[in-house]
Image (cartoon, rainbow, N blue to C red; front, top):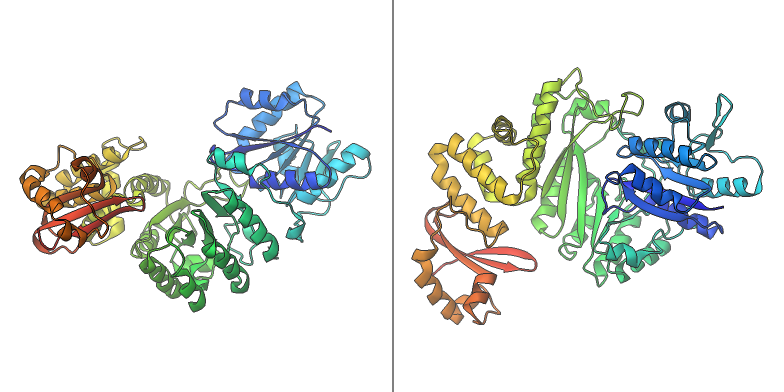
Length: 554
């Protein structure tokens, strides 16, 4: 049987872990399948042509919140041009309510209910050789939908195969590699499907180490673990992290963790891992106690705060914290408090998400709420603008000192970003795209219009942030001091002993190389400490980013 598995991602850089695992397991069972990875940006007729070129007898598709409408349209086209083909769907958008899914897309033949590796292989065997269709596969029998056995899980994750036999091609295409060592989640957060399987299953450490060593050997730059809560069992997750920390690699490994579960033992280990080796995504979602109770989520905010602050102080792990707008019992004022609580931790990124409800509750994906009894449509729409502004400013990491000062002027981070978002929207800047220089100019204009009394100080901070995050650019709208500094700067670089106090391996080469690697600028006050009085900073540009050193003698 000729089989095509079609993965429709949201972006080209994403790899389809689910269908890759299904293909690998099928191959273990003697079933060959061709995997095509495409995106929702691919024209439907192009995707159709790519599938039909293989003349398949069976096509399998994984359906997610981001591709459901696209997949349904593709399935309808497939049925028109290949009327005899068997079409199988699986994935989180179709696995739990086959009656509704067959009503939505009658062109489907089968729906795999749950984790698909074993069930899909058994379905193919039956279709090839005959016999009774397996449980956990829904199908139509006339006007009736037959769905026996409910949703299924793979109990033994060691039975699954490594999902990336084409690893060299994946690396060459610069795609993100997704990996999982566990499935299931013991928690029961009401907005999340991950807790449906409370039975957390683990791939053995032996298999995990072997898989990760293959990824390291192939020089994969970024591996994202998709385990819903990676750090559940210290006896399991710490050996994996130690293995990765000790490896000879430049790869970064991304984990979704629950920060309040980290023990003293885990924290001491994490403080010593190589910089950039790990990055953590931490789902806070809300700090409002009635909301946490309503969604069945248990968080220790005091411990989470202490652990996040400690990890940030270590400076070696990128931290990405999440909030969700639209949760029950959380109006705009409650969300404001949650935002300020998390912003106060100063994570490297703070992602604002919006509550999505169960399929079927709303007509079309992504099933994102428009209003609730606690927050109205206008408020949620404004938070969309604020999210866009926040992504362009804080989450870009380019305006650390400027934003620190501006939020201090307002005395409330949410109040500041709300003011900026209102100004941004009034100018028609939302939902336009903006590059780093455009955002810098907008912040400058915003400060000029809204903080005229502090404008000169904000300009100094913008210059400092530009030198840190946008080297080589000196916009004309800011006051640069290069010419008046020129003679002092040249004398500084000729004094090798003085320079080595800041750059130990310094040797003068050429002025062109100096300009490429370093910059010196004066400021009317200290942008870092806020101390009054003229000061000078040396900016050192290297492979690990920019370092700013205050010059003591200049």
